[in-house]
Amino acid sequence: MAITKVTAQDFDKVNAAVTELRDYFTNRSCELGRPLTYNIRTYGCQLNESDSEKLSGYLEQMGLVPVEEGPADVNFFNTCSIRENADDRLYGNLGVYKAHKKQNRDMIIAVCGCMMKVDKNIQKIKNSYPFVDLLFDPQQLHLMPVLLKRSISSKKTAVDIEDVDYIADDNNMPVSRKRKFRALVPIMYGCNNFCTYCIVPFTRGRERSRDFDEIIKQMEELAKEGYKEVMLLGQNVNSYGKDLGENRSFPDLLEACAKIKGFSRIRFMTSHPKDLSDRVIEIMAKYDSIETHLHLPCQSGSDAVLKRMNRHYTREQFVRTAKLFRQMIPEGAISTDIIVGFPGETEEDFEQTLSLVKEIRFDSAFTFQYSKRPGTKAAEYEDQVPADVVTERFGRLLELQNEIVFESNKSLVGKTMEVLIEGESNTAPDILTGRTKCNHLVNFTIPAELGISKSASELEGYLGMVKITNAKPYSVEGVLECLKYE
Ligand code: SAH
Ligand code: SF4
Ligand code: F3S
Image (cartoon, rainbow, N blue to C red; front, side, top):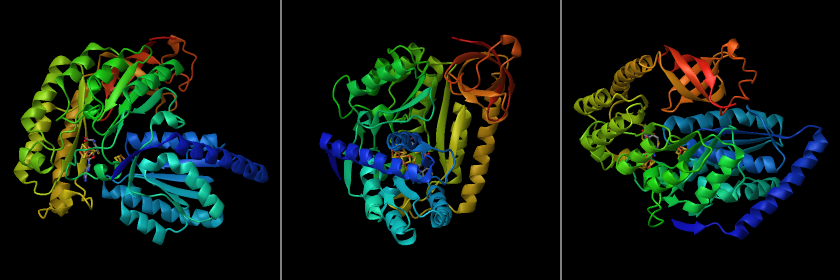
């Protein structure tokens, strides 16, 4: 796959398409006597979320208005290919949108994201869902306006799937951020690791780090604009800068970001255990604005499985890193990802995973049943674990992990913790939600005697001190004691 830099001329074409589409949608809106709307469904990880925010940026430049739920006049499905059920969700939804499009022939339906990097999916959409108006893959995000224009003017499906690994730097694209206090900042794209179960290196291409100074400039602007939380994103942030040269490594970047004034929380993910250096942990401990939460996916507790997964670390090395973190940041939290039922996983291997979970006592874990992804090495392995065995093991892991999380939540009761307020919770209108510095989810009330007149949405991005009063299995509850700044 060739790596090509997107040129200024490419962006001239993109911007010309945005202007033409803005005129087109304005005319249509006048004809209809109402604003035209758009909706994006995002199926994947934070990088997909970040891509959706860029699509929103373009669509809003075209004069379209966002709606929370589709169908809208312009609909995007930003897909994920990480597990099989992610693929199934797209096809289910496209079936539903076929009926919507029959009612409204001018409706636009676009499919993008990681599934569009897999030929089989592209063919399936072209053959079975011919009403889809445009298709493009994550490396071609910036081309969306050009394709949309082509599709509208030719009334045919516009496709631009070619095997080129573009670098479209963030700074060239408009962004409409979903949360007014949080900015997602990709620092690198792609992955070189080829874990044998994983589709990402095929869908996102090889690692490309963004320019160090460009990122810092962007961060300074975000701080000036008033963003309180930033999340540095990459599939393996710890290998940031390997393609850039000296003093351009992830710890250098993290430290430079931490020195920028104005952020309450700097978050980052994902850390690959093989590349996480002790220096990152030292920097996390040193700067108050960096969250005290480390997402460190172990995937398995068995060395034999880790080897066949191509993870390049042993259980012992993982435990050393996790324990170093616990020692240096005792109030911190570690979360992880675990796959159950990787091909060849024996009962003993699985018990190793259970024992690792007991040893590290992860503060939270994303647990997954292994899903065979065509094209990956593990999909060819012959010793696939039977589905009933996977389900049974998965249940045991979940039970153990839930117990640990509940206990860890109970240990917080009575403490007063700093919480970054995220707004109204979805439990009840007078309950707000936020996260502690180590990423615990806190739902809390504001006592009337505090005399705070701001609404939940006005409080988004504020820091508050919350006294934890009760533990639930996946969250804690509390009462606001004070806001940290007015
Ligand atoms: N880059 C990150 C995570 C990427 S995907 C990392 O290396 O940790 C998020 C998680 O999905 C992975 O950590 C893994 O636990 C899970 N995952 C990836 N492929 C999978 C598959 N084929 N089946 C089940 N889970 C999978
Ligand atoms: Fe996938 Fe492994 Fe890369 Fe993570 S590090 S994206 S799991 S190949
Ligand atoms: Fe999914 Fe692509 Fe992210 S496969 S997890 S959306 S990088």
